[in-house]
Image (cartoon, rainbow, N blue to C red; front, side, top):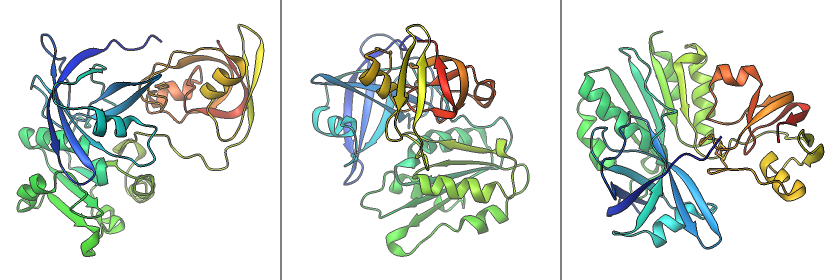
Length: 319
Ligand code: FES
């Protein structure tokens, strides 16, 4: 798959939302930005010396405006992208971004839609609640954060609190989201959406799974999923016949680049842009990406080699 075309934008505003989070407003250098739906993200490219970071960020503004608004948390453990955004990007900077894509769309139903955010995982919900509010759909947002000084959009969301549709949980004040109680009162038509730390996502999947079918549970997961007990496996590159061993701590992509010296086009390296999609000719993949849908994953004929691994190997790739 070719890398998605990029759109050149100019940064027109940089706002500090908390001690750790900055918001950036991007306007097109020329013409109109493509439209998007709530829950969409863009991938921002950040040339930084010999590296280009590529991170996905949810669009927090309402669709229909000719701007992209994103919020970026400075991650101490990041590969450099969030540091770049916080330190290098200012009003007037030019940023290349991908067209918007939506892997976290609202289900087509009247709801109720139950939105669960942890920390910076609030970002995709900012456009969702605006869209749901505009549509008059039933929703609840439950937003849990460590402390108001490090959380984004708390003041904006307090305006909704009186409606009972937004519940804020400031953990530093001892306020905790009670997931079993929340799930216990859902009706069968509810759709649950979650974005935040892995531990929250796992808990939502476990609790929602007791009362709702899997297709009513929607997750937004930027960053790599942790794999328990990852094992070593072999990948065969069908075009050259090369065999590459992939260790438990590396990706197929990384192993191919390092050991076989084969260059594969890639952008995000985290399983959501689709650029590294590769035809799977043999073996069974353990799909860990956000890009392929469930039907595509079940077909076992393509794989995102930046994050996915072997379920039953060895894998044979059309490379
Ligand atoms: S490089 Fe983006 S999905 Fe693999």
